[in-house]
View (cartoon, rainbow, N blue to C red):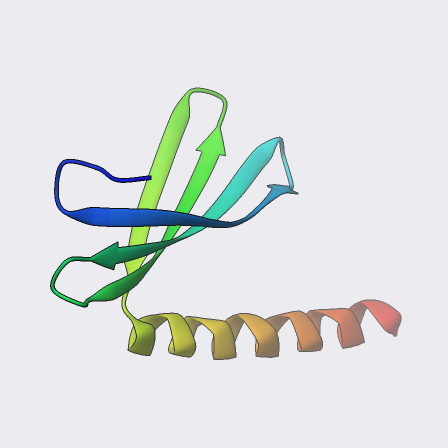
Length: 77
């Protein structure tokens, strides 16, 4: 899907989140070669969009994975 800013959006995934939220992940490819990860969080009519570069997405993924691992261990106790 192309938009007016010379970017191509590619759908990656969509899944529900707690409290009625929905998360959508897309790759954004710019004509310049820049690649971003677009995270859209929908809560009823409210949208939050976050575009992350590869370095930021990688750092966030590390923290999310570590948090989930620790939270699951805590809940198992």
